[in-house]
Image 1 (tube, rainbow, N blue to C red):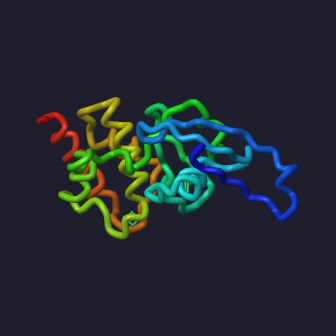
Image 2 (cartoon, helix red, strand yellow; image 1 turned 135 degrees about the vertical axis):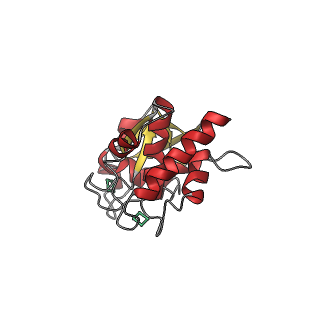
Length: 173
Ligand code: FES
Ligand code: FES
């Protein structure tokens, strides 16, 4: 067990239902005892200190909390941690290799696909899911794939260019 995460009031711990879960996060099996109400985003950020996953709206609107669950992009603010039990989760921390950035990260750097960076982890994970499924997307397909992710800074154009840059880099590799 690597993390115990419980929110309880003093003296109430014995009455709080908990469940042990095991999730493979970025290739590493991690176990935790959690309350059934704990959100996946909070398990990642506060339980496992993977703070690359951001929380913006907590209402499934902004996409900043997007991670991959068995390769599918999900908004971790609207998923319970127990729903990830037995599954693979990939966060933005899992994108880069040991010594080099992922092509998507390079693309965002090369094409200036970020400003404040708050939306960026979610944008990158949604882009990863897209490129895994469709390595050569059109601009429209990129915009559609990222339509659940909001950015208040960039105007989106450079984000689209970043994903196209990454697609080209991955194709050339
Ligand atoms: Fe999850 Fe905004 S924090 S969608
Ligand atoms: Fe600031 Fe997207 S770069 S919200």
